[in-house]
Image (cartoon, rainbow, N blue to C red; front, side, top):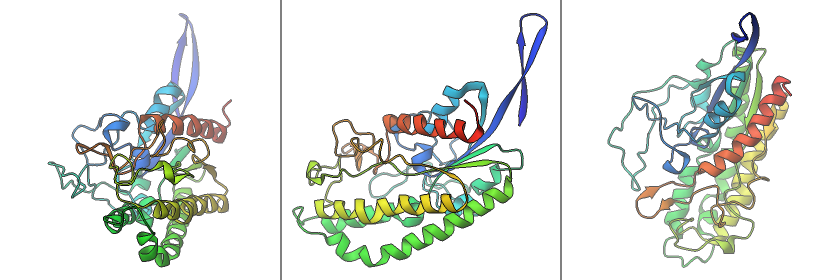
Amino acid sequence: MRTRLAVLGSTAALAAAAYDWVALGDSYTAGVIPAAGETFEVPRDGCERTDLSYPQVIDRDLGSLIDLTNVSCGAATIEDVTFNAQEPIGRHLPPFSEDPDYPFPPVPPQSEAVNPGTDVVTVGVGGNTLGFAEILFTCLQLGDGSGGVGTPCRDDLADNIPARLTKVGKDYDDMLATLHERAPHAKIVNVGYPTVIPEDTSKCRYNDWEQFASITPGDLDWLRDDVLQPLNATIEKAAGEHGDAFVDLAPSSRSHSVCDAGKWVEGVFTTFPTDVAFVHPNAKGHKNASDHVSVAILNALGVN
């Protein structure tokens, strides 16, 4: 823990503790899309951390209480957090968008930012290990021309989802073991994914590119119930097995899905056809995350 001095009056000084916090994660932590603020890395490293992402919001809200190191990175897998040197993609997402600065040099494994002096670690990761972006893209392709009828994506992909979830669980367990080894005294706060798809998928307009475009309502139901909810459950289970906290963002964001009027998650595009979002939280979604994650950080540190 680093120590800072706050001078009171002309003669008194008070030693105030600043807790070292390391934020790890993928694009749902980093921010990435313009609707989650502006990138602030100069020069750009391709991780696309934005100034309205929840780590940055919490950093401003908690002020001198914490000292943030934010190494979250768009497109990160669990292995990128644990041991991989990741090659960031920036905003290079063909065929939807191309980044003029792509490709970017590798960034170190995120866990290298964690050390014996770290007091608290937050981590939000798992969707890219599951292959959620790839699944979404497949669902878009298979739903095209379906008229919104049927479950072409479920029919094609359902059989391999259990194996994907098993890999998430194993990799997540390995990651937490590594983080605890690197920072034996740190509290680890695991952050789940928010509600992306509503309970009532009739809210979602077929072929609306500012929602889920050509993904059918039946496939959206499948993605919600058999892909995203089990992903959160897998993360929560791994966290529990290591005695770590889990922040469940799904309940608080339930009425703010991609298809709700007051959405906290953008659709395939924020504004079609110019602003690609590919289903990521906007600033309101990150503000909700910051509210819940900051409470979890304070609880983990025993700060009231």
